[in-house]
Length: 214
Image (spheres, rainbow, N blue to C red):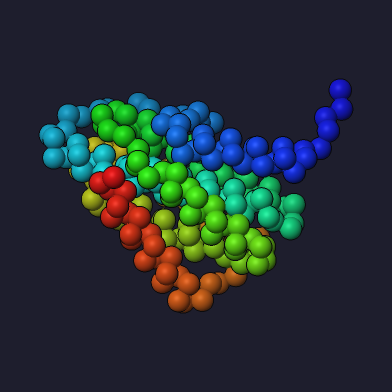
């Protein structure tokens, strides 16, 4: 049986399905088992539970944004190799999304109520960057992943010391993000101007402050 190429409408429907799944599915399927498998769950007092949940909610939002960013970039990429790289990275980010969602459930908490807003904003940024050029799009990946890597390192210092399950997830995510940045740089990603990096940090700080609570 010969499969027909996807039409423009097909692609739009695929993007809508991906957006709805990312923004509203609290526990999507992952391709890799969670790094927390086999790690002993320890009892947390209420303050530590709420704090760990807030941090993992922030990480979950970060993965929602990563999905949206990569999807927006892939949708307008000129080079098929760049598109494939974006989609491959997005698949790994789906694992992160699933792990964070699962951990939030274990902590008796929920994802951010603003996930549709986070997704829409990140998708638009990814699409705009991709429309300018593939190299700029890859540069956004490099800088985004470098900032996320630093942010995850910070979370390793903020998570309750006894919450080893969350720590295992964050450590693996940090490793994956560093690899995504290296791959995007090797593929031709450009170094973004300082003011753009600063605006990205500011937007990320706002997102973290809001997502920690909402």
